[in-house]
Structure formats: structure tokens, C-alpha cells
Image (cartoon, rainbow, N blue to C red; front, side, top):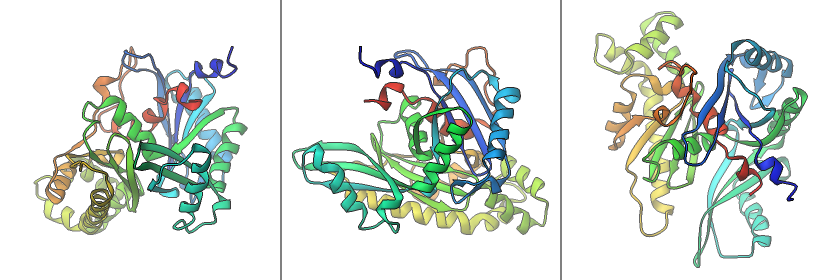
Length: 356
């Protein structure tokens, strides 16, 4: 028997370690059947637990994870094998076009190409790549590199708490997998916008991840800007952001003025990534057809309409939960669902992919 076949059939759970919160989710994955959620949950920890993507207070993170799994979990997690995310903002990614070559030569070619633009010595990075297209004209791939101190701190933490890490991947890659698995429009070239708490990740998904970037400033910054402009508490600003947002109302003008600089800068960066996609895609050209938002910040009312107007594309928040079976478990509340997209993507990693 192939010694890897046992591991290919073993379940895993997803763990999304964010700026100040972690999410977990486990799914049963059976081909031809809707994924079934076995357990999920979210817990928070002090932001100082992680610095620049590196876990510097593993005890605080351990206590948070332990309490979540023992006390606050919805359902159950019954495996120690884990697929964990690292923040896309702390990674370097680039789409590459290389001439046709033997697989034995490809890794060296990718490393040489990466050295041209990553401002960190290659010796200090873990580097991986995924081939998106290959034909007689050459090879197209997406390269991802992450500082070793970030990966090592995550691996050390997971092993210290008794978990078996089987995959680490950027948050946007995990979210894109869930978009691909659970959204019927995934075959159409799309802009994915992951609105996190302190940064926004933007990617073009065209049958695979084509290119992505990170823009600083997220949902927490929107709350602070609203609070400062309207001279109200952070709690009131948070409620106003999530209840009224950019929709018509007595506070619309003030809210738009408050968050305008951040959102306008985001639109500018999205336009740049769209131009890059248009300039580098292969023939025949593929036209972007939609914008799909995810992440906790995507709940802001009027945000999709804003993106649609500014970028001249239909925009919507990803809502894939009809394609997911929660069995007898309650579904996350409407406000919370979008923040589970990334961990659901990690949880939907097929164990067979790990050793393919």
C-alpha cells in the first residue's frame, strides 16, 4: 500500500489566525455532496500577540484557541490535522510567464525570477508556486513567497499545542478556494476584495488566482474615521457603519466624507491591478465581469454599490452558504458569515491535494 494513502484520507480542520481573532472550521468533504460543517467558532486575543505576522506571544494564542475548542465551539473538531492561514499582506506574490522547460529546471527559474523584485534575500523566504496554464508557448504560474520567521512561528505554535500542520497558505488563496468551490460564478473572471480589519486584499481570479495585492486600511480604520468625523464613540461608529454605512440617510454625507480617502485609495489600487491583469493575460482576452467582496468589512451597507459605481462592474458580497450543509448546527449570524469565508476555504482543502 502507498504509505501516503492513509494520510490522504484523513480529515483536517481550517484555522485562520488574523490580526486579533482566530477562526476554526471543520467540514466533511464527499465528492458530489455539499460540504457539511462539523464545527466552527471564533475567538479574540490581544493584537500585540502577533507582530508583523510573527506570533510573539504563543501562550496568549494557545489560551485563546484552547478556550474556543473547549468552551465556545459550535459543533465539534475531531482531528488534530490543520490547514492554517498566514496573512496575505505578509507574503509576496507574482504571476510569471516562463518558457517551456523541464520540471527539474522550473524551481530554479522561479527563484531567479523572484530575486529580481522581492526586497528580502531569497535565503530568508519560503517560496512556492502553482502552475495556472501551460502550453507550447510557455508556462504561466503564480509564485508566493513568505518570510521564514512568519512560517516558522506558525509551525512552532501549531506543534507546541499538539496540532499537526499539513498546509499553510495565504488568506486570499484560501478565500479564493472557497469562492471556486461554493460560488456558481467562479468560472467568470472576477475581482475578489477581502475586506479585513486592518488591510484589504485584492485579487483577480480567472479560473485560478492570477494576481493579488494588499492595501493598508481595513474595517477598523473605517470605524475610527467615522468616529472622528462625527465625534462619536467607537462603539457608536461601529454600529453606524454596519447599520447605515454608505446608504442614503441623514449621516450619509458625513460618513462618505469620513471614509472617502481610504475607499478612494482602495479603488485606485484596484484599478492598477485590473490594468496589470489586462496587460498580462494571454489570448484570447478575458473580460472581468464582476466584483465579489468577502471579509468582515464587506458587511458595510452600500459598499458593493460604491465599488460597482467606481469600477463600472456589478458588485456583490459573496454569500455561498446555501451550498454548504450545516446539518443540525445553527448557521453563523448574518453579520458574522462573511468573516468565516477564509477559514471555510482552509477547511475545504481536499487532503488529497496535499500529496498530489
